[in-house]
Length: 305
Image (cartoon, rainbow, N blue to C red; front, side, top):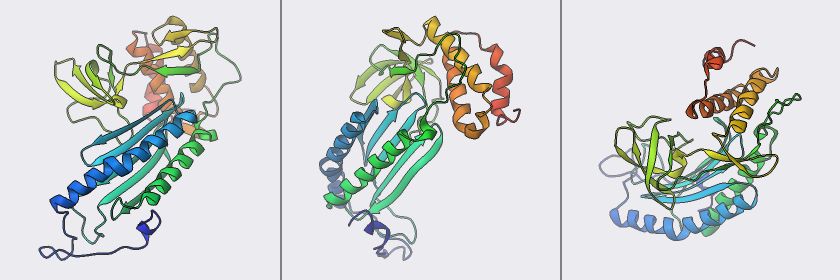
């Protein structure tokens, strides 16, 4: 079944025990689909990740966990995050077709969804349908990354200390200290708050095990752990986010954006950016009391303009 047909050729088969619901997958059917995720979907996701990296996405990671295969990619200072998932459903909602493969693509800029598509497949036998879904995902991801909405706003009056515009995220590795972070479509486990200080105690591929301040251990995706970043300075070389030049640049950039008359045109995106900048200052020991009033305005939707 092709990606397009998944929306048109809907076939409903009711179960004997529940006439309004399609019968659940048999164990053998589920095992076959799980195997197909690894052999038919993961290779396509890995090729797709390579294409995104060739087109400016600094990170692109493929994960296979249980009944779900995922590709998560991130691009740019104002994060463009793209996710493509294929998930096997063992049971079905009332009055829905017995198509056990659910797929979804979504591309975000900050907290704003700019492109997204859902669909269902009866199986994973149609390689062309999987390729078509992946190609559409690449097109959407590149279109968002190149759009005006994804570009950082630059004031005509540069700050006294120029913020380095290029960053390299520090990948979580054993011994690194960082903070938890929520990612679109990848929530933190219950009981683990966002921005919780953690230490990475083990890492393998895209999975990390961390210890929180209370000594509890958690297994997370590397996307859920923020170990900071290194910035490419204008004069050359890399500077940690804790470097005074970087912190001064971030502080000036935050005030520059808060005072921008065009702030309200992209309210959510700009508010997220300012909050993130202030959080970088705070976690590196900087005094952020000067931003108290601005943070209160942001919490109220930045009504004072």
